[in-house]
Image (tube, rainbow, N blue to C red; front, side, top):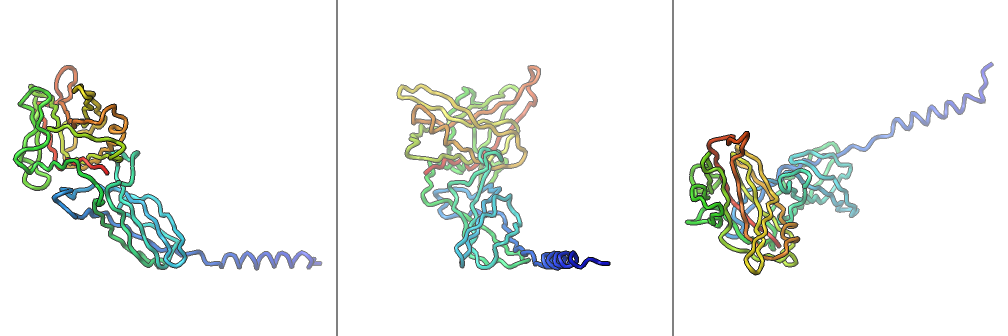
Length: 298
């Protein structure tokens, strides 16, 4: 005979399990974030609006409840699912690869964050196209766009006039001119420095970045000469870019160089050379192009 005492619990468990299966899962909304656009505010001050904003940090703020939600760091452009729906304020922070390295991915301190009110609906895609500008209190110590009759990097440090940095129309990133250096097997090294000595006290300037557009056949180094009261120079070359056949943009974080320097006077230097293998140059001819070299701090 069937024992009914055990049947009821089994039936109850079946009903409860079926009820759980019928519970509706939350349907996410989707936020699509386009690539950033850097807009001009005062071209006479900040120069070019070329940028290489590769990533973004994204937040949502619920306009009704006041709850905030982090959607994390994303590579742009990207579509992100969000369980937070309804009226939201989206905040998008522009991020760059400092020193060209993903390991040093950071929010760029001299670009403004982007904010916008949006409505996120379940199973629908909402698109935002973030824009940014340079922050108002960014100080441009120099902007070299190679459009004038001369330029800031005219000091020859290799004692070879055949390897100087000159204005050129041969391969222009934007505008009418770029800076150009030509190397060959007989003139295979260049060292050139800024015309001026810049006074930078870390307690005053805080974050310090150098922006550069470049295209080069050979590795290219950027650094500083730290100068004491007697004129003695202490070199620090920390940044290297490898050969690049197309124009590229890089952001050098020079904060630590400035912060740890023994003195507050600096000359900015770039140097390059044709590599050698087995005592012979790896190439007989090399060209280096530069544009929009900026030194920025607070």
